[in-house]
Length: 334
Image (cartoon, rainbow, N blue to C red; front, top):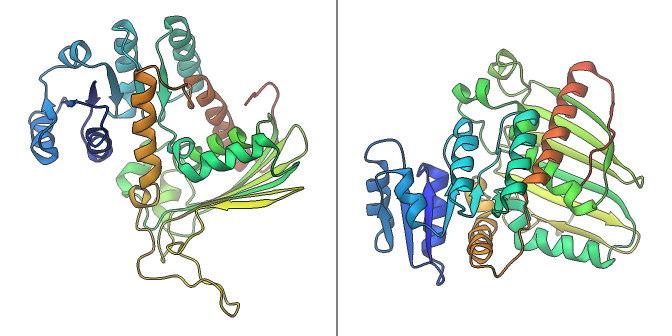
């Protein structure tokens, strides 16, 4: 099997390395519009990786294509993959606004081409197991979900004006994962935020610490908390409380958290430094699943239609933050 990677910046190169490590992948083809970048990535990755000169060459030779180019190029590249009938894994977001995304969803579904969206939590072994246990009824009735997402260091401040804001950029992963786990529509959202880390966030009309409360159709509530600076390390966790059990993911010896209870966990020097470390197994699982979908061995666990849910919720959170009032939602399925 030959898998193409369009865009070999930091994320694309990481994905290419994970693809090259799969026994089912014979060759990884690399394309980037920046001259010389694909060739440099091929040299870095070594045998089994080959640079190609054009996207057309990538589409003609690849059994599947991973799109890791800048966000504003995603719609065009996705349409070219659909026209070539090549299965795709597209980094999030597939499109920058709901109208554009809804149009792409219709095109994808009409094409019949498998398109996966790179929400890596859906491929994380612990999150997948949590999803399985919830669906199996092991937790009983879901009462509460708590999600924590704190970056170790703030993003490059020059990125902020184009980031889409904290709900579309940082918390979008939890806005995807939590409804997927609960399995019910969100009927109301309340969100708030503050600027505590750097005034550059205020200058970009954004916040650097935020909270969102989701209320689901069945009555369960979820609290999502996110921040741009945790001095101890990168901290992303999920906790679910049900009528039969209480489970967590992301809580281990590298979690940057210290308990003041005797014998409790203590933050250590090897706390996670960023998303690539924290979600290493998720990214490996994402590439393995993509290869299986391309080969027809697996169903798509992250279809593009589901991206409408997280983007609608992110927009609702932003409206709530600005207005200071809850936002009621109708017809936002899981």
